[in-house]
Length: 288
Image (cartoon, rainbow, N blue to C red; front, side, top):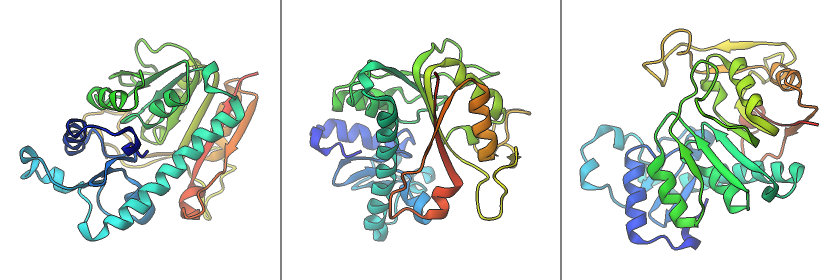
């Protein structure tokens, strides 16, 4: 998301730089200025290192090894930008896809579970959604505050984790989104059931699946990787990460929850790796 047309102030850019160094503004594609670009497109598309291109590192972070680990190789900045644009293109296509099936966003309240730094909630609000809420186990409050300031939106953020089949206090909304989240959830079917329980009209799910040349994607399968890859404190049985579901089981789960229209998201950016896109599946499920 190119934020330069919104003319963020130098103070806002420096706040964004600070958030990037704190890993609160890394994964999703945002461009704040010519010398501050963040996003994981480079790691996804070409397996390159780094999620932050910055003209300088704030003094408070210069000696922190964790910061150096997220910086882009200066010699690969052009490729980093190109890969990030691909990721941004993919995300825009998702939003367009949802809008094409549901109609004007002004009719709906939206929520995203596992919203990260807020790309999709901000997009929904910019396109006129009636209200938008984001939930995440990481506290992205300062990131949402900054993005709301820059683009003039009023997206709500709640630092609440999914636990034991629910998010405490989560209210039903018209449309629920989950992008690259359920692969980090050990009780994957229970989590899908939770998403369905708060989606009054529709839900959009995009995740890495077991689809591929060597997989029978029509079997009803879940595959667990080793536990505690990311969340070191999650205890059994909730620590497995990543978790992959077969496309057939994902589609069946949506049908079993009472969604009668299942639309597959197939709009791949031309330059995106075909295998990467094929392994990920996205579905918009709509209630009657």
